[in-house]
Image (cartoon, rainbow, N blue to C red; front, side):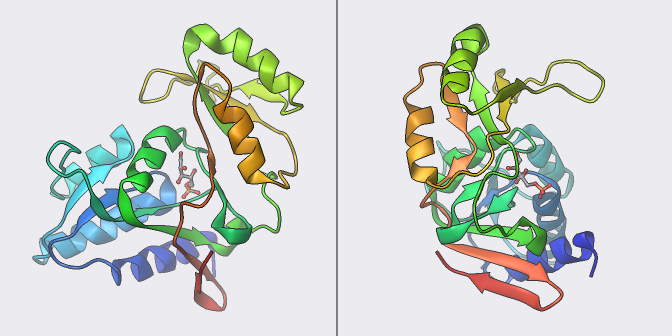
Length: 225
Ligand SMILES: O=C[C@H](O)[C@H](O)[C@H](O)COP(=O)(O)O
């Protein structure tokens, strides 16, 4: 099975958890985009749902498929948030933010009764940290935050687009990608990052996911924390 086929299988399985009338968190990234497209098909067939998107790109995609979009004003609680991940570690601790969307993703996942991760099996790891950990930073604080991350040996590097221009998030911030290697205690690292003024959010999701749907050659596995 190719990685894209596995992403499709995970996304399709996630649809089994969606019921008529639900309010959904719509994730970001390639796996989530596949889920949103599948959801769009169901909406076309009459499924009634509404969603809050975790990025401008996901919102545009959902709107193009006529999936109704709502806001936290109208809908402060979501039934399920469904999103991809860059790494899925023990206890379903995650690294997210490869696509720069982790701030809104964390807000949306936190507002959902269930947060379901969809991923192909290449994302499963024994220890988080092979994927660089994204840290979203207020622009003016960049030099200060960079120094603090260096002092923590997190090895931050400012994210750029492939054309060399600076990467700016949907909320107007920079991202420092930390090639820090193994993260043996994600909760500790998360709390260190949380304590740095100027850090808006980071890509460690600890104790948030309630289920991961991991697709590979052996089918789709349901992984619990
Ligand atoms: O910012 C992006 C998100 O956290 C994505 O969910 C994550 O990067 C996984 O993306 P993909 O499904 O494309 O591997």
